[in-house]
Amino acid sequence: MKGFVAQLTDAQIFGLPVGAVVGGAAIGGIGDALSGTISGLVPQAPSWVVKAILALGVVNFMPKWVPGSKDIAQVGGLFLTYDAVQELFDVRGNISGMVGQLTGRVSGAVAPKTSNNNAVATSSGIGGGY
Image: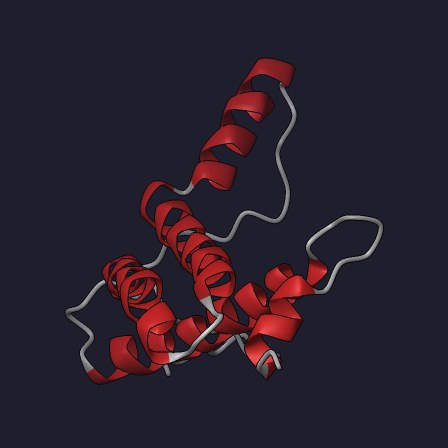
């Protein structure tokens, strides 16, 4: 009999591996929470570095500790790696800026850079880190 993780990994809808994606997204979410916690406790550690290390850990150790989790671990590692690369290179912001320059339009919804990447905005406009 297959374990829960193996059954989740095998779940498909119209041939799409939704089980592995759901499991991987859950790992990515947990990794995001851990990254935020670690970055809050150790502000000198860039969040992208923490996510990259978590991705390596998930891909290398989860399949050893949780039977049947290889596919979910790979998808979770992919989510964390994507987040780390996005954070490091600001791919969305850079592409949006380039397209804006080419078209002469101001791109929207690009958060301003701050000295504290963990800053949060509040409804009053006064923000603090977490």
